[in-house]
Amino acid sequence: MNNILKKAAYIGLTLLCTLLISTTAYAYTRGVVTGEVVNVRAYSEINYGNRLFQVNRGEVIEIVGVCGDFFRANIDGSENVYISREWVEILETSGTLSDCSIFIYDLPRQEGGVPISQADSNLAVTVVSSFENWFGIIYGGELAFVEKSYLSIPYFVELQTAHIPTATTLGQEIVEFAKQYLGARYVWGGTTPAGFDCSGFMTYILRNFGISVNRSSRDMVRNGVHVDRSDIQPADLVFFSASPGGSRITHVGMYIGGGRFIHASTWNTGVRISDFNSAYHRPRFVAARRVI
Image (tube, rainbow, N blue to C red; front, side, top):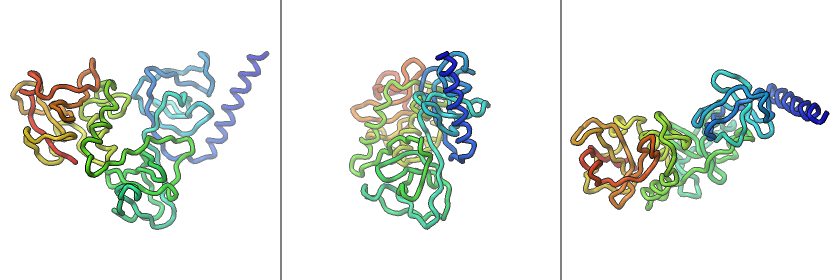
């Protein structure tokens, strides 16, 4: 009898969530699966009987609502299914600026930010991060900031904290941020902490500091300005070929100082620090670019 009552309670909760969500227009929200293998369920109860299928780490899903400890989501063509909130990290959501003329800043005001634009009324924006009383948004393809009082997002969305650069130590700050992801998995095409490839790692790190670069390593070498090998500084991008003396770029990393660089290396090692002047890397070096 207890099991029957328990199941009835779960079903009742699911029906309530369904009714609430069906009458609520949630903003477009994306998340990434962070668990190695995570169950997707028909309703918000953890048991074997309601498991529909499984998704792997790095899968990007569309979140349409929340029900207790579960996100209601659209995953791999299946709509309105459930996945545990414990194993999903929010990547971005959307919001609309309030009905007034609002200034967009390059940084939060208390961090020395200045207005870079005045947004149109009711402008829809992609929201990617949070910093005190500011939201980080994508504006003109780059990271910008707007005061939270002018923008609302779904109540269940927890955004990553924006990393605010300091003018005098920007290169080192970027390097320290990158080091947080040592050991992260290598995933072909990966652009999130769930898994990176070499250029995806660089794109992710720099984007958190409002720096936009091309997606692939061979295109990324067009960003910024050329730096001689003898003048490379922390946060400069370093590019390599697959063979000694080659000119075709196949790999990119970030110089961190002391003759070392950090990069998403291989399937076996993931994100690691390597010797820039090693017998392997030195003859494969092609170019360095400064993008900050």
